[in-house]
Image (tube, rainbow, N blue to C red; front, side):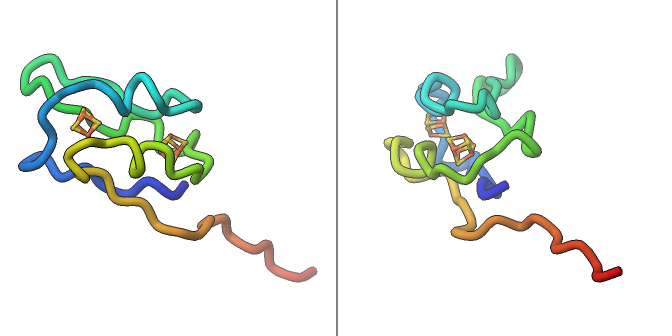
Length: 72
Ligand code: SF4
Ligand code: SF4
């Protein structure tokens, strides 16, 4: 789950992230016409969104955050 945040002061609502994300994580907010992270759990940390956003509005963490299971 690498994607973390969309800076709404930068987002212009172009929809590129919605079109480009292979895991269909983003949606457009009808009211504000800006993107939001709808299905965070589906993110596979490919960083396409961060790379493709023309406004540099999307921030991703460079690591998977899957919890390591406790030993048993
Ligand atoms: S690609 Fe960037 S500017 Fe375009 S809708 Fe997504 S977050 Fe907003
Ligand atoms: S990092 Fe990849 S899978 Fe995750 S939201 Fe961005 S484009 Fe989608």
